[in-house]
Amino acid sequence: MYYIEMHGHMVSRTTDDYRDMAMAGCVAVSEPAFWAGWDRSSAKGFEDYFRQLSEFEPKRASQFGIKHVTWLCLNPKEGEDRALAAEVLACIPNFLNRPNVVGIGEIGMNRVTRNEIATFNDHVQLALDHDQMILIHTPHLEDKLKGTRVTIEHLQTFSRIDPNRVLIDHGEEHTLGMILEAGYYAGVTLYPNTKVSVARAVDMIETFGAERITISSACDWGPSVPTAVPQLMLEMRRRGHSEALIRKVVFENPLEFLMQSGKFELPRLGIQLRSASAAD
Amino acid sequence: MNQNESCPLTTRQIIDEYFIENRTRILEVAAFLDRLGRSADQAARASDFRMQAFSRALEALAAPSTGKVSQIQLLFSDPTTDPKPRLDEKSASGAWNPVGAAVEVS
Image (cartoon, rainbow over all chains, first blue to last red):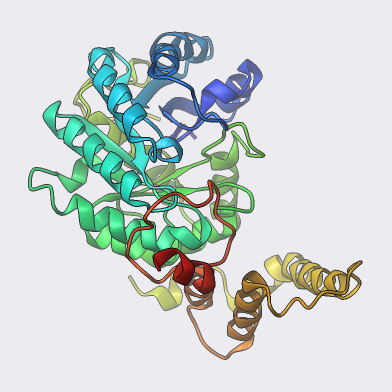
């Protein structure tokens, strides 16, 4: 079965990982901009990173027939630095017309500080000003509940937001309901220790249903599994869920979301720009 | 959807499939608590805000109720909505520290 990796930080992964993902059925990767594990020293460092995301990674992915799309921003872990944020946001529009850039992300909050919220709001305004889709990170562990609440509260202050074009990621048992009830797409992340196991992810699908839910590995430079989504597929089969339900979660939902960008297509599968038809 | 029947497996099938791996998880928790009891300094663990949340989570786990995961998630979560005035630490610790929050707000 084909699947779409909705959230993978491939700049941190090897070319062998792309190959393994392709062999497991991956046909597309969506890569949000993120924190490198250390704070970048200037906006110039981000410009180089955005070039890597929009020039180098698509070529690397295409060697294995994988479509690569990306999201640009200053990551929540660096959102406290308002001066740096202003410089980075000023350079992002220069990259928005690139063919694989589908929106602004992953924006959001880390520890839910005043500066992080201000930087988040600036990113949302940038997305609205340029008619971009939005991918939102929610904080980890004890900060997730508060961060998700505050994120939704601030999104609702923007009258022009279309919830259908916003994905709020890293949802868990105590936050998934509020994301879906507010009308947004919700992401569930399969990541060791700090996020969700495949078993819990399937529990959440059983509890909340499959509408507007996407699954990803969020593989990055930490201990993480680039082929976690196929592991979820195996877990769903283990429990006797239908192939149609599995396909909806790992392929159709992310496809429907990404196609709203007007830049997402999978010609090899007969999926053209702004067309919802798909072949497996 | 009817959440009560949303898993296709029967009770017996769920136990057959998942008992061993969850037995292992309980033993891992027990081993963690025993390890704390053998710590080099024998410091009291009950004063650590993370272990206080951990103890409450264990009580929720043993209680005869449904929705245990959400309950436990909430026990570890910051229940407030006021933003922090500034960044304290880059990373989360896994449990909310009410004492730290009180100091920070003042």
